[in-house]
Image 1: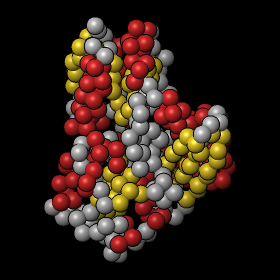
Image 2 (image 1 turned 135 degrees about the vertical axis):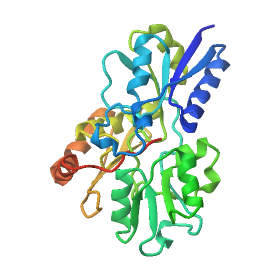
Image 3 (image 1 turned 60 degrees about the horizontal axis):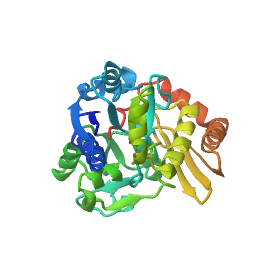
Image 4 (image 1 turned 180 degrees about the horizontal axis):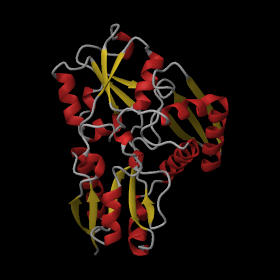
Length: 311
C-alpha cells in the first residue's frame, strides 16, 4: 500500500475533484491525504489576471510542491493546465470526462433566446463573452468572478438575469438541476479540456505513474490531446476567446474550433475530421489562423483582456 499526497487548490470544486481521485485510489488499497495549496490565481481576486500573465496561474505553486516532494500528485481541471508542461512533469492520467458543454442558468428564463434585450449575463470567460455576443449582440455581458457557489448566489439575488458556467462543475457539485439549458458546441464551443481532469506527477516518478495508470481513460485522452494541440498551435491560454472541442467517433475524431473577437463581430470557425489527434489539432489551428484568426488574436494579445475563467 502506498500513501499518496494529493496537491489541490482550495475551492469547493477543486476539493471535490481531489476527493474524487482520492476515493478511487483508496479503492485500490492506497492511503491518501490532501494538501491544499493556494495558487497565484486564487490570491488575485480583483484584477484581470491577463495583466500579470496567466500561464500556470492556477498550477505553478502546486507544481513547486511536486518538485519539492511535498506532494506526490496534483489534481487539476485540465483547462487550467498549460498546453506545454515543463520536462519535470507528466500528465500521468486523464480520467473519463464529464459533460464538456457550457450551461445556461437563470431564475426567470429557460433559454438564452428567451432573454430580453439588454439582459445582464455574467461570465468570467472571454471565450464565452465573445460567443455570447456573436449569438446575441444585444446582451450586456458582465465579468463574474468567484467560485461556483459565489456566482450562483449572485444570480439568485438578482445581480444577473443569467450566468454561464461549465456544466461539469455544476454536475460535480450536485447543482445539475439548476441548469436551464445545455449550450450546443456549434453555438458555444467549449474550452480545450473542459470537463476533464489532469492528474500531474513528477516525470521521473515511475512508480506513481504506474499506480495511476488505471485512472487513464483513453478516449478522453485522445480527444483532449487533440484540443490541446489546437490551442497550443493557436498560442492560446484561458484568457483568449478560443473554443476547441473534439469528439471521438469510431476511429476518427471530429474537431470543432472557433476564434472570435471579444465583441463577437468577427467569428472564425473550422471543423475537420482525422485520426491523428495532434495532427488534426494543428491542422485546424493553422486553417483558423489563415482565415483571419491571427488578426483577432493579435488584437486580443495587444490589449487588456477580460479576467480568465476559473473552474
